[in-house]
Image (cartoon, rainbow, N blue to C red; front, side, top):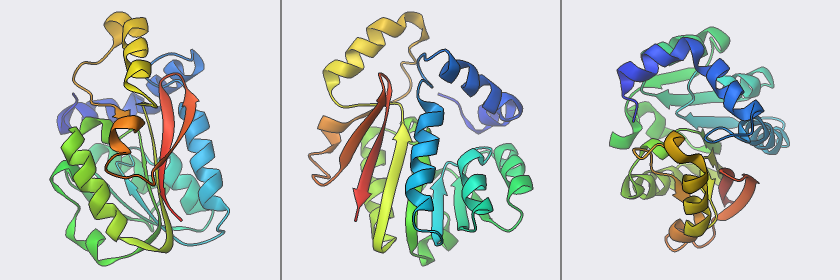
Length: 205
């Protein structure tokens, strides 16, 4: 599992390394661009609003929404990643902090039309994911929606098939979403499969 220092070191080459995995349709980033495009399309249908991005990295998706006129708030634990993102979104409200320990205080005083998290929550333990999603849900506006795009599987069996197929590439330190497991806590959560190792989990209206 990468810590803050690891992400700082990865920041400059992050987008390139993701592209290689996505273009090869290989674990862990197969479907990455499809997920970002799909989430961007869902959000853009609203035309305007307030977006919170959890673990925005270098700001690939958040910057697109910023360009479309959305007010962007976000939290990431890598200061280097934030520097990259801030260069793309000088007017965004970006905070540094480990979201496994909670959200930055200013983020808790808003409501959001969309809360998005792409390829960030797999660094959390399952209980931490559940606690964070519970917190985020309380911050949604009345017609708000949570959209989580990540390495994710519909069933435990699907995850195990991917683990076997990935061989030595499989990261044992990351904790991936399995929809059939988390749906017990969030029965209205929906899952949209994007690739053999990725999908979008959504909550809201």
